[in-house]
Amino acid sequence: MELFDPLFAALAPITFFYIVLGVVLGIVVGSIPGLTGSMLIALSLPFTFKMDALNAISMLCAMYVGAVSGSLITAVLMRMPGTAASVMTTFDGYPMTEQGKAGRAIGLAIVASFVGGIISWIFLVLLARPLSIVAVRFSPFDFFAMIMMALALLVVLSRGNMLKGLIAGFFGMLIALPGLDPIGGNYRFTYGIDALNDGFKLLPVLVGLFAGNQVLAEVLNPGGARATGGVRQDLKGMFMGLRDFAQHWFGMIRASLIGTWIGILPGVGANIGSAFAYSVAKSFSRRPQDFGKGSEEGVIASEAANNATVGGALVPLFALGIPGSVVDAILIGGLIIHGLQPGPGLYRSNPEFVETIFAAVLIANVVMLGVMYLATGFIARIASVPTKLLLPGVLVLCVIGSFALANSWFDVGVMLVFAVVGFAMERKNYPLAPLVIGLVLAPIAETSFRQATMFTGGSVLPLLATPVPILCALLTAGMWYMMFRIRRDG
Image (cartoon, rainbow, N blue to C red; front, side, top):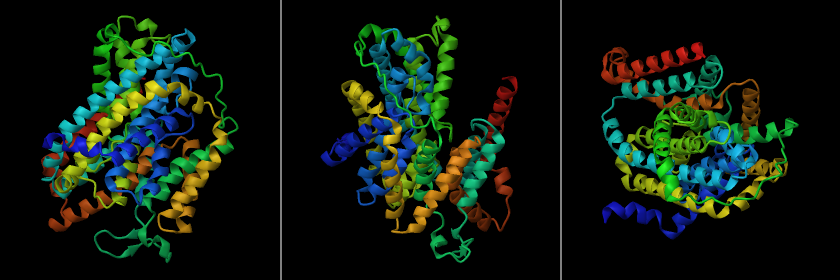
């Protein structure tokens, strides 16, 4: 029965309630164009302070699952993906809606989302524990090399200008410098400001970058507060039959495997996984000419892959303490807030906790399937509410959440400043993901590097002559070369 103990723990009434709540909130917010799962999870962090760590992280993970899935509703019905994860779904989902097949398009997307989530969950369970066991033996130089690889991959895979991704990553690392020196124990870069003794707290920065930034963007962008009326409500034919499974099972599994692998790569995101799986599906399709005109294969590939990135991204988070996406960086903040140190030691010191979280992710995918089937029509009507009506509530939550962290107006100011920073960066096409992950990983990288050089008397030769750093360097160089070739040929 020990095998099922984590599942029973996740099905405890209060934990199950928070999982369902997280999935529902994630689906609703994910389905509203302009709002994102990152914003929802960042805003929810302050409200988990008084919660049990298991319930809090289970709810946040359930929000993650729900937000990626909910985006498909408006992508299919209105050609307005709630998040970037479902952009590819619009290419074939909306044409199917125009052909009177909205119910079938959503039904295929829901099942593909579920299959993608389950397959990536299997890999999460199979890979996380062995990887964490191996990682316990890593030296500080090994961890430093892996973190540098994560940042390098994040930059090279950034949308748009790679130089801007590099600048954003370094900016995130600079933000992490003020406060207490992790090795020396003295204060640095505080400039006599007592409120900076703890540095820039992660939560106000995240709330500002994602929630405050979104409010500012919607207010200043005349087209931002979009009315999304005209939702088609004819959702007949949502349930798939055995013939449908026989026809599409291979495409679902292929896209799920692609999404899982893409999710494991640091900072890549569900939108890249979805786009890659869509391209592969089109390349191997017997009817590639149908893609973009209402292809069922296209809908399935996009939704299976973007949901599979969720489980894939959780693998490096729980095994290594390295976030696989922006949402995972926020989840690391949630773990730290609840006194849990992300990394391989988390599995060793709290195996029951980690395995129960994995069970919660499985339950969240099952709940997502049920909620999406039962409430898609209702959620579509919620999603048609003009975004401008939601902004005052979001702004209030930004202020309350930032202030509640330490009862400090300084943190509210930090949130507002980073709302402007995030808005300005996105206006100039600087990606936010490298900034956030640079902010999260910089203290870990600094601590690892300084511990390593203390052991070696200041020598960095082990960084150049041990297997893990060399492997990380080769993988990074290979990825950079591939991306340069792709961009040059494109």
